[in-house]
Length: 273
Length: 320
Image (cartoon, rainbow over all chains, first blue to last red; front, side, top):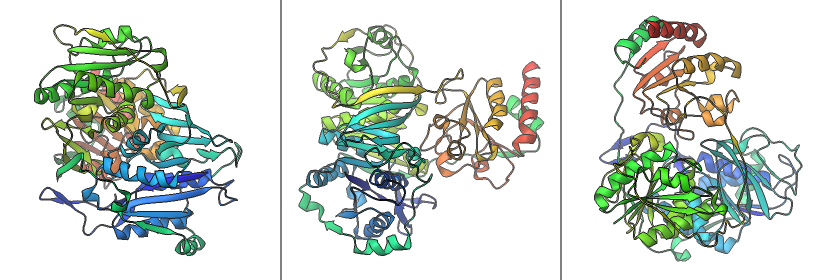
């Protein structure tokens, strides 16, 4: 089983953003792997192992598009346990979801993975598009917003659970396919490969951290850097970013002293109860 | 040129979650000219298409037994052919789980640019949308001839029925190829309460509720106010309540008249899902909790000491 995991680096979501002059200033930010993509790597690793840290079968290839120093984030994922990395030179400002999806399509045509697993959205752009676009361009089935992914023993299909507005939906999907994952995908029994592990298999309720051994091993793993131009992707942006602004600030409210005051104000002032 | 809007239905009715998309389509149509045409896809959806026609100028109905599940693999090609046949220049849907799944795939098939989760229509191809968990509002411009967008439900008023219903045109479906995808089961959360996304009042509990049983008192408050129950990601992750109650960047986006956050700190990603609420009440024992920064009314108190009293006081106020 060969699994490709597209990953994006994003500005640390805990840091306060500097917004001004129609732009977001990211000069002083720290970068990290998009949390949903990190979960996708964890899911992919589980699909290639019998148990946590146990015997492995299969390959997990991480691919990212970004400036040169995105190699730091890719190395982190290799230290987590991914086998190989591909970094395609690109600048976020010159990309849109379409261009990212078409670039990934070109990589997939060379790599020929059995499955693509990725985060449902990046927490900076919040587009929630690339996985679906990629599936559309490839003509592959898509399984989005997954909270569970169980590969069939024959490696030809997967049973998935999706988090939808009304609850949870269960689908069977034929491989190769594009899967996008939601937060719950790192649950203890959310992901497994029936060819490698039974229904009792259990992982930790979180994504794994890189061990010291993993960090050392990552230094020797292959990280191939590709020039975007060599992939032959051309064409302009389908969606241009015009400007960024701060959202309107909510007027500071008041602290009430008691439940009685709260109810009285909600009743007579806000008129909501 | 026409604006198409994907209308989600049951077998008998238009889903109310699609009404904001109709409003967004009406706004787009002002720039694009031409009618607003609804697209209904499903199995035995004749009655639903007739219901949907009350809100738009015309409905295209793709009715086929193989279309009962909203699979992007089968629905996106139909949306593409609807766009091509009508010569439409815009395609919209509400940013529901179906809209978010199906529309990007339709955009891919059309080679069209797409704006996700838009909160305002600024022009024929220009939209405003939240990014960075709602900490930034980004204006985007689609550069392709056809524009695709999903509309955030809370930011567009639900459309009202038009003076007269539009006609329903049944379209041939042709061969349906799901590429092997198959819906096996839906485990719907059963609730007598209104939908989170549409409720006038939302009461949300956070990590501070400590355990599932403690949500009982929040349910009592919720029902007293005729609202919907929500929760923070921390409360969902801890297994106190089902995941589909999660409000936030990664959960549901709500904008009720009244939002009551109880024992909930107000992480950035939670605020992203409720900041647009009209009136926000925060009850938290920690006076430094970030939720107080967005709250109109803050009460520094534990839920144990305040919620039962709040219920009693509201009952009194209602009786008065």
